Structures are given as structure tokens and as C-alpha cells.
Image (cartoon, rainbow, N blue to C red; front, side):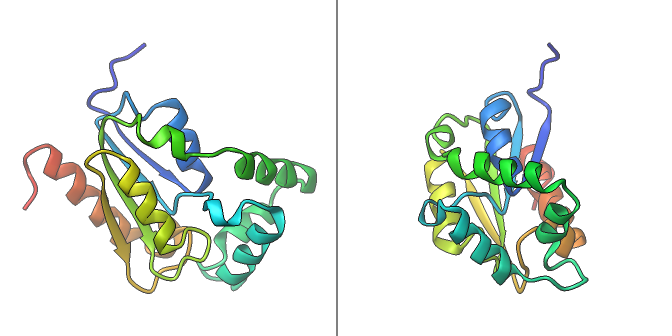
Length: 161
């Protein structure tokens, strides 16, 4: 396997759980945006309500709902069940690389207290909140997120401010 010490990994939403499980110890920098699942919302009903609160408009807000609607219903249901059953918390303390946790200020799916807990469980993690952004900041604020990510990565390479 290739040495991944110079690799930067970015994961969004449920992808944060996957990244924490599979590769976090091997990467140089890890960026988790809108991490799921908040332990205070570990049921299908609670997650559905938070998804509803995130919105359904045609813009980038509501992107998660659009993605779920693109899936075959039973696959979407099965994916959400697995997401809810998977507890990311035990994985977080095992992350050894520099980590940035990013959330949208208006994200009901990855709320403030939860993302603060995520960051507090990872040694030396930093947190960044994008003002006025919903869940899926990668769709809602792609340029701002890109600048945040590049700044974080460049700091590890000695190029930051």
C-alpha cells in the first residue's frame, strides 16, 4: 500500500464516519465537514426531523435530501440505518493526524455541541464554523470551504499565516 503520510483527506457528513474508520491514522491532514451522527439524534425519526430542518429548496441548502431522493428508497433507508448505528465517538480518539472539523452555522444535522464534542475527542483538532451555512457546506459554500481547507493544509506545510 502507498505511504499516505502526505495525503490530505476530506469527508462530509456520513463520509466522516467512513474516513474515521478507514484512513484517519494514515493521513497527513483530515478535514471532517458536518460530521454525523449526533448521539442526541440516533433514531430515524430524529434524523428525518433534522433533515427536514435543513431544508428542501433548489439551492445548495437541502442537498442531503436531494442526494437521498436520488437513491433507490430501500438503499437510502438502509444507508441511514447504518449511519445511525455507527458510533463515530470511539474512533475519534484514535485519529493521530492534524484534523479540522468544519460545520455550517445553521446546520441542524451536525449541531454546534456535537461538532464541538467531535473536535474535543480528537487530539489537537481545530474547529471552524462557516457563518450562515447549512449542512453540506461543500455544496453550500464551496469557495469558502476550499479556502479554509487550503489554509489548514498550508499551515501543516509551513506555508500558512
